[in-house]
Image (cartoon, rainbow, N blue to C red):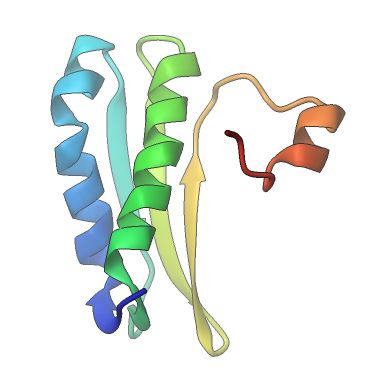
Length: 104
């Protein structure tokens, strides 16, 4: 793990750019909403990128054409909260219980 100070809005933009071709092919728009305040954190940039990529990949895979996926970042007391919101199908109760388990 390599912790550095990273610009969260920059990470959101980079993730959006990595999926530009796929979102165009699926007629999906990626929106970025960034709140005011200092949106820099000490984190592992590669891991944050990997998390964003996983969320975007799933959103595109299960999302109906013609909609939008929103990447957001906002300050929350002494932290930055990052969100990915879409209008695709929700997880079942069973899936929610296992969402943070690693698959092999």
